[in-house]
Image (cartoon, rainbow, N blue to C red; front, side, top):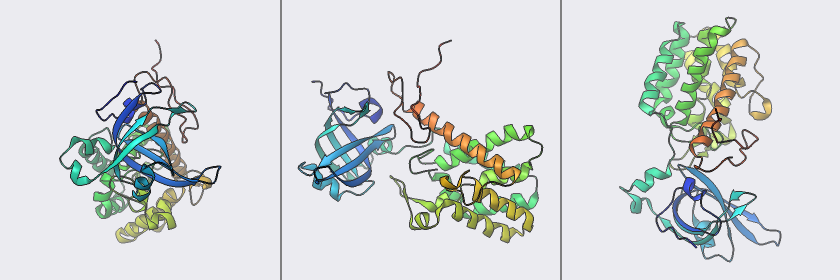
Length: 327
């Protein structure tokens, strides 16, 4: 049996053969108490670092059960475990675990390896984002968008775009929105029926409620307002406040608010209403495109060298072929 005493990244752990043991310093992303068929309680964990995640179960007779019961989401642990697979997905068997404090990791590169960040430079993304605001020709629309980011800009620059589904990492919201602005800039000339200024304004503010919906430094969770109101309503409130401040005319303000309220696409996906203006339809579709491609890009980044397919991704409803086309 091979032994790997140096902590491994999740991406590397997934390439190990069944039966190998490994050690890893990992972030506790989720701890959920469940009940087995025999009636005994067990813990369902999600552990990970910036390269990926995997599930791990801890049963009541394990010495680590009490340890993980006391850990909140965002705790850090060093584990030793044996590689096992369940339905072709990594599901290790825990051998040992110990908690690590932030003080123990202070000054260590390990901490940086736990927190996933956007692959693009955040400062460059923010500079480009400012250019997209400046590109809005209508003065009052541009002022309204600027007022939103004067209010939330610091939070927006570092916020994730999701808890888990897409762009779910530090600076992910900025990356997602900037990518949408790039796509909109390329696509808008194909659709002259769409008001380009209104559509770009909608792209830039559509997800702003997520700076309130999400909280946490190492692990993202939903805030109280996020649970009770959701980012669609919270974003609508931010946009309405800014529009009233800049005296944006009522028709444009209502249309901009509608983009925010409808950008999720379907009611079952969290939209407050179905898109009912040309600009709202456009923003909802560009949002869905970049969300899906963000999932694809992340799966490709996290792929092991010899892994032909990803695990099934909930957002894509499929496994993703990770190998490049043969030409």
